Length: 390
Ligand code: RFL
Ligand code: PHB
Image 1 (cartoon, helix red, strand yellow):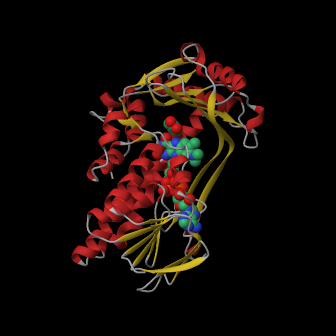
Image 2 (spheres, protein in one colour):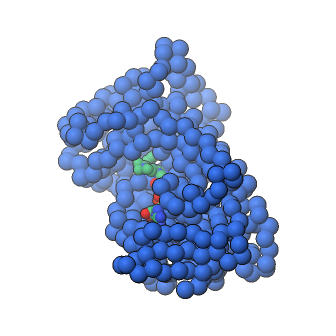
Image 3 (tube, helix red, strand yellow):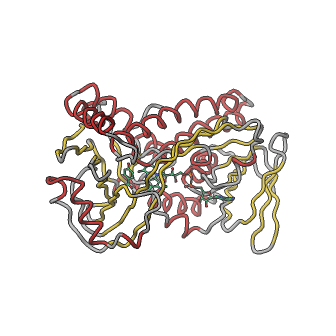
């Protein structure tokens, strides 16, 4: 088999890139380790920046998003049990975010892949990358016992944090930067109306809590938990009690309880790989970087990476220009580091750290009180939250 661009991984990064290339007449094949139901079923991101929405619009994939997505002009912070609102729309000159679950994004991308004949190979095992520093790389995998080889011009690793692509960069080229946080997020989904029409990020002595949603009838809630916490220790009743307590009297009393149908614990990590290119191998999305979910940046960064990379690949095929490809890693990393900084900072001011002494705690309280009072501080938060320009 032969194609122009081999894409490893059919998550948001891989599928968006595949569609962007297809739209520009560049051939691509997406190779995915799991099946469609698994990828589509993963409950993850919920908040899309305007640039991500714009990308889906450019692909003609925004019809359901416009109908079902919830546009949010503000977000809310709670500290000392008090809630205040950051009017992102007013502070950024009209920007907003859209609540539309990653599961919905993936559904739309997979449906369109079938309709537009973007080739996606599911259940590919033992994927290996070959000759990525030569002019003719290839990808080999095994599916139902049969080995297939795909020759291509470029390989793009969109295979997430646990993928094979990053490992194909030689150790003397690869630099990694990491922070592992000493806690996780316990998240639930329940078919109950959300506590509030916008998100609420709460700093509480006992730990962080987040009130989010998927629709007017489906709530998504998270609470900070110990890194080694078990789900069995959190029956619904205990979760609801703790959530309501941490959200404070105003938001906590508005929480509508009901049976959860999803409950998972996610670790928190900041991680960056440099460079994001080696020869004809490019990395995009979680394969290259991880952010803690506090800033809602992961999926949006993946989308921003492939927006830049697809333009560079299309310029190569249309005009023979290599400048976009040469500049990809630096350009993507400049944005990645800013999102890393924001996600790390927002995590730092909202979570309870085990080593925190009285001074550190008071620094958090003072910072939140400052944000509450300062238009400048709220503007800084708002412009990062809605997403920095590409
Ligand atoms: P993904 O989604 O991990 O997809 C990678 C795909 O590659 C496949 N793969 C392989 N395929 C072939 N061969 C191999 N050897 C392979 N190894 C792996 C995998 O099966 C998978 O299908 O990476 P991608 O595309 O870069 O997308 C990244 C996003 O999924 C991620 O950043 C977000 O989910 C992060 N995130 C959030 N991002 C936001 O922008 N806003 C949010 O509100 C938000 N909330 C979240 C989040 C992530 C969370 N968790 C659980 C990590 C909330 C949570 C709780
Ligand atoms: C979510 O709805 O899953 C969500 C929202 C905001 C975040 C993280 C996750 O910061």
